[in-house]
Length: 513
Image (cartoon, rainbow, N blue to C red):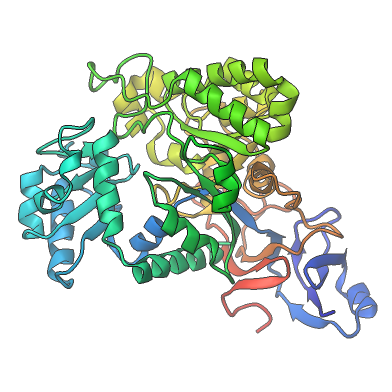
């Protein structure tokens, strides 16, 4: 069996070893370099040059195809005005072949001086008649051209339809489906490969794909799960259905983006009080507490993980009520054993967190949301007002009340950037909501494996799978013993190599050279 001996490293493990031996797919020894050379004289020696070696990250919520399409597609995340957005569309359409739907992503009108997205007429003019689909940054609404809308008459007059502005809710699902259908299998697979390479290059060894009938489709999921030589892919399918469907699709659970509601930015998250900037709107509730209970009970009985996308406080209340009903039906121990999960969980109280924690529910959360939209002047405050808008994503309260956290990006909503996510979780924009660097690192490593029911420990210990990443951390000083600094303004680590169970899935060419 091939043995690799890493030396001259700063290894994030008990005792601060400087060398690590990997035999096959398993860590077999940790210590200092001289002892390692004596113990493994025939090993392949890899000098990491003082680099930081740590467990590889898990991204617990991604959408691979749409993320891959963004990497070399129409990226609107950098637009700083309505004018910028329309100019980007005009330039992109002018430089592409005329066939197919233009797929873009990332506009956010709350950052623009105009304070509004383009109208359909403005987008039609910029697109010169081309069919264009542009998802908002939260992917819960989209701008579409008239030429694309005309291809999807079943979207007209459904909830969320607009003849002049963004579409949301059911209308958006129909339009997005038409845009997805215009992608060829080759385009889809190329996008998936591009995204998986991108994730591996950021030290990610596993991703949780949150697929579903309104998001990506079965063909998309099948292609993705067949991908090899990439981060491990844990599949989820967001549909209320016979739990046997999980085995049929090869997914871990009927969970992930099974929508209880929408998103705050698109004003579709379900609220108990109306939006501050839209006083007639309480958002959109897609599942009742009874629906949630029925799904949890069925999945628990079948040994399948259940879960929901839940953001607004009305949706959180429905999910908690649904789990309470399920606990009365099957017993709390059965829920704990099943390890169900909820995604996002932004507007949650300490009392609700304690109830979810008691039922063993995992919180799959995205710290970058707070970095992007939190604080007294962010999108949350604009949509919800200061009182509610600064009370989202209470990571410390979730942990304190027994909810295990798994960190993810929800890419393409926010980028795959694990160290940035750790920084956002530690330096939360609301005082008292942040957590320690160690807790944040654990949530992005061990927490991700546990959220998928995987026994992999997410640590570098003898006998553990050799799943790790090698990082250039520059000259920075640690926040805590063993961890690089994530202080605001500090340069974040750069990935040099990512290894999944002994197999290199990303190599930047700087290790051992």
